Amino acid sequence: QVQLVESGGGSVQAGGSLRLSCAASESTYSLCMGWFRQPPGKEREGVAAIYTGGSTYSSDSVKGRFTISQDNAKNAVYLQMNSLKPEDTAMYYCAARPCGGSWYLPLRSYSYNYWGQGTQVTVSS
Image (tube, rainbow, N blue to C red; front, side, top):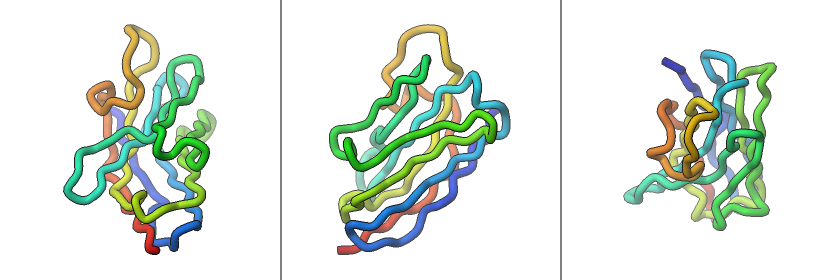
């Protein structure tokens, strides 16, 4: 069972930046990671992910503003969020699954086996 712990959330004004971190309890070398978010009263949505082989994916709503990266030496994945907007306000979750195996959709929550507890991001106008 992989444990994931997110950190780095907080309150920021529109246009600001935050960097979310996700620490994994085991080596991320063989894990494929993703970031998801759930705004109040809405469904969870995929934000960014690293696919098997290192390709990255991001949703259209954050493309050009958010960047996902992974540091296997630290067993961590990060989400750098720039030019934040009020609509980015949400609980942000880190997710993981074993890499390899069958093809999967990297920005779909059902593709992942392990989840963190989330970190809140609030962007004010």
